[in-house]
Length: 171
Length: 171
DNA sequence: CTTGCATTGGTCAAAGTTGGTCAAACTTTT
DNA sequence: AAAAGTTTGACCAACTTTGACCAATGCAAG
Image 1: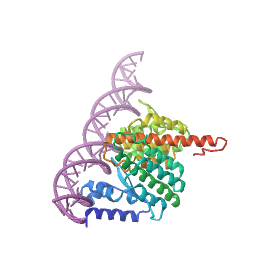
Image 2: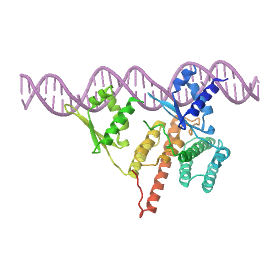
Image 3: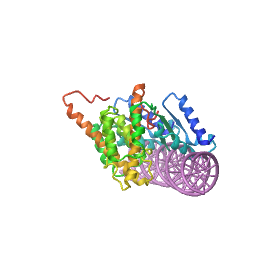
Image 4: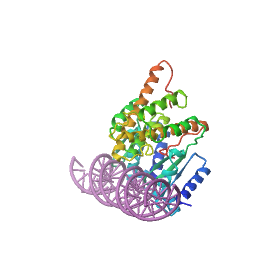
């Protein structure tokens, strides 16, 4: 079994036994536990705990720093989930993005206020930097996907009655 | 938990139980209480009790000297205006952006749900394309500005539409 | 008064503690 | 082979903690 797979299942096991919908871990600790380079952890996170897989990652550097992994439950039957999978993909042109947002709004999949925020994020004004259009499309897709996941997560948190966690909150 | 966090919450607890909206403390006393260097107190003050966080600091040296921490109240939209003008600029690093969002949230300038959406939009995950960090910082600033302006517009629209009603019941 | 000095806070840079990125080397799959 | 996926290490960035040195204030001795 590959190292990455071991680390992946170790983390998933942690997620499974966690009471919250997210866990915190120390990159260096985990790397030492698996006798590997710390950057191996980043590799696992970036290949197996991406938004595509339904995870969100937050981290802090410096003393007391840590990595937080949050699971976003997505059901294949969910309309929004379907749209993210089938429509967003890895590249979104501006017209495609606008159309998708309109459809999401009229079908009540997301709130108009959320749609407005997403539109603002991926508007030409926001992406007015000198990079190839192709890359802007990739950016649009990533931003759209990440924001839609956040919307899904909020809705789920409301259902459970729990408050969303953000890493900046200190105890 | 980080020492700085402990000191921060200790001070905030003091603020909470104070009758005034300000407290006085002795730097050396506090440092001794937490078994740390006195300058650690300055670090906490300069990273967590700045005007951006809604606090003002006054101090006096010499015998009987002390540090006074005062909470300043500003209207949410004014604060938002100020932060957009003074803090977003044309370049925003990821830590700067996160800090700004946290400040906007705790000062009630924006809702946590909006903050979460903005955070998703400008997160490293969303901006994971092969362009120089400089350009990502420029992107972050543009996206942040555009989204915050959208939030402002929404709030102002709500305000206009409900002037006769009782709104803004925030604690 | 003036001066000395004890007391109290301020600044800054170095060291310490975390995590992030990227490209080269290596391994497995096609 | 070639392509795709994995592993590692050198270098970078962010945040915290500490300590040496500086500045201001009040008070007491001269």
